[in-house]
Structure formats: structure tokens, C-alpha cells
Length: 323
Image (tube, rainbow, N blue to C red; front, side):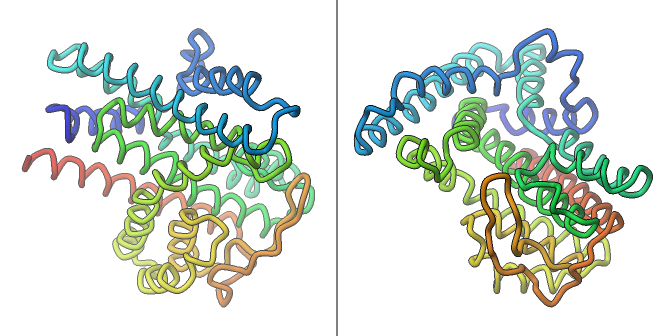
């Protein structure tokens, strides 16, 4: 909203469209998704800049170049689209449709709901299969409680970086901000790993992703606390768990929505978990909460996310009305 007059109303329309339409497969089977295009650019730059023959210092510098290239590409395309389209009725609708494709309310809800429904109706094996679509940990090690906690953690973290963060940057910087955010977030998911291949090359993307997710993660936690109050859940525990334990999470951002969700639902999240190639021994978040989470707790997380999305839309509408 800092640079484009109609942005907040466009953002609000994008939120509503995403809630209704989501990410239709029939459409993206015919056209490349914007995130797919960012992924292709990242893969191309990696093939040029992340050669094993390069020194660690050179790979880190090349990672910075890759990040700057992504930011410049996304910013230029976003600015051209917004300045060209904004102002007319049809143009504003098109901008909202573009924004809709980069917000993940409905798709996140549907993915997490599939895990809940699998636990309720088709058994643990199918639930493991469904949860493997949204988390990186090895599902073979997960019992019902582990599957449930994994789904709730995914719901919490992805509410922050798949819903609140893109909406935040769309509202603040218009379509350029949204595209830059998605480009950086895609880079973090592809190359922001602490392993031999990406530790140096992906360093800049991972650190910048942490930075640009910082405001949205705090807002996400607050929205979940307010949603817990509205829905009659443990809102005080949600707030105190954030204040006490969010800083203990291995991510500087994911701890905020996860701590809020753990406190609101009265369950323990995080803790030791097995990924495909390694195991982490993190402490539980809200360790005094129930560890035996189940499908009802997944349902609770979805309800809190839904209320939080509605609150975010209301916030955008209120600011747009008074500006």
C-alpha cells in the first residue's frame, strides 16, 4: 500500500477469491504456476553458480548474486504488471487473480484436512501418506499422535509463510512485494538447506527468507491467540507459550505460530522427530500439554486457522476503509 493506491482492496479481493477458488489443478495443468517459473530460474542459476569446483567463498558470493537476480526479476515483473493493470476494473480483477494464486489459504486447509480425514476414516497408513505431502519428516516413524502433531505443525507454520506473509507483503508493497516474497521463499525451500551442497550457496536466500518472514510470523501468532479467544480455547496459554517458548524453536519464525497453536489446543508440538536423512532432538513446545494429539486436534487447528484468515481479511478491510 506504500506505493499503489488500490492495493489493499485488491489484496482483500485476492483473499476472498483464494478462499473460494483456491489453486485449481485444471488451470495450472494448462499454464505454468508462477512459483514453478521461479523454481526454473533458481535451478538455472544454481547450475551456473553452485559448481562443486568452486570454493566455499565463491559459492556464497554466487548465492548472493542468485538472490539479487531473483529479487530484481520479481520486482521488475511485479512493478510492470501493477502499473499496467491497476486503476481499471478489469485490471484490478486481474491483479487480484494473480495474487490469489500466490496465497495458500484453501490449498493449505485442504491438505491438512486430508490428514484429519484419513485418520478418521481410512487408517494410519493413508494418514502417513497424506502427511508426507506436507512435511519433510519420515512418515514411517509416525504413530497417530505423531501424524497429528506433524499436520498441526505444518498448518501453523504454513499459515504464517503461505498465507500471512504473502498477504502482508502484497499489502505493503503491492504485487512487486508479493512476487519478491514468493521468489525468496521458493529459493529458501530449494536451496536454503544446511548440507554440503547448499550450506554456502543457499546461505543468502535462507537468511533473507528469515528476515522477510519475521513480521508475518509475529502477526500469525497474534492472530491465533485472538482466534483462540473468539473460539473459547486456551488463549492465555497460547500467549504465554509464545512469550516463553517461541524463541526456543530452531526457526526464528516458525516458533511463533507453532507456540500459539500448541498453547491454544493444549498439546505439545515439535520435540524429537525423524527426517529422511537425519534426526533432530528438539525440546517439546508446551511440553506440559498432551502429546497424544489426534484428528480432533487437527480439526481444532484448522478452525483456528480459518478464524485467523477471517481476522486478517477484516484487518485488511478496516485499514483500506480508513486510508
